[in-house]
Length: 391
Picture 1 (spheres, rainbow, N blue to C red):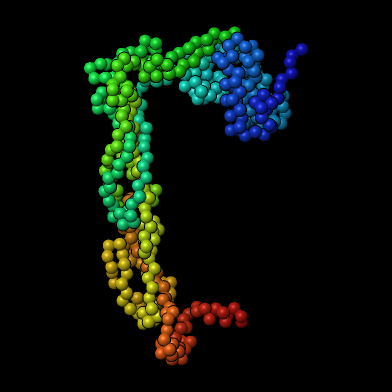
Picture 2 (cartoon, rainbow, N blue to C red):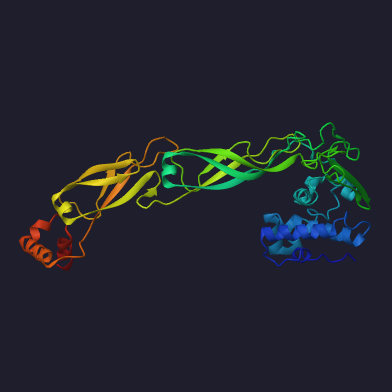
């Protein structure tokens, strides 16, 4: 009598309704636990390994998972998973990595990209291929004015640089590297294991040369064979006009040195712009609030407005209301994209006196007696709206 199948969720140690990420995470864990390479000759582990992959094949497929959740084993093709007998004459020996659902990604993650299939040819990554160096990131704080007009800054940072003594080879001057005999210069060590289910091949960086494909007999005394030394360097940063907080300035080739003759990485300068005591920035426009007196608002007046490049005179017309916004064209921030300047938006606020002498209070009262409703009344006034509302 055939042994009864276990529920796929139970196989992966999950509850029904588990998310895609939970299924994938559980599969990684169980596949590594029962992998034949970790359990040589263990028949029980081999069966569990097959069972785990069958469960994942169904639960990782949204359509199959839906049918399984609704109808159980009857809802999915019994030969669609790992347990099907029609896949190949030799069990593992008849499959490549692509036949095992997510196994290609799993083994790339955990076995260094060297999963070549169960008896299949597979592809092998070259650990000693030229690789670009790592990118670096530095934060730099600048003033509001520096962001508006642009500035040249010099920064200091500690980073790896190519060793001058050995020219970045890692070998002492007058000596040279030689090809690693264990990996034959490929940088990858391939291991083949035969199991009752077929042949399994895995590749990983060569332990003798560290994946470089070359051996250094006499390391450089300055960099100790790494080809890199730590050094404090100065770098000039040209910051264009119009940048803002979180703007990024890329400096090509100033990152970490490359590997195996690869290019250096890049340095990214992330900016933080300090606030300004007078101006607020909205895109490429600037905003400022300017107080005016009752007299200036009522009778009109020329007021002085500060801008980033000096003071300008602006005429406030008679009858200007508090909160009125005037626009000064081209007095904002230069656009990084178009090169055109934004505008300066000037909000005038009525400044009400708080300290008055007796004579001043009397003068205001006398003025108030001479002003009537017609002095304030205009179309759509608040009083008209209130009157209309209550009528």
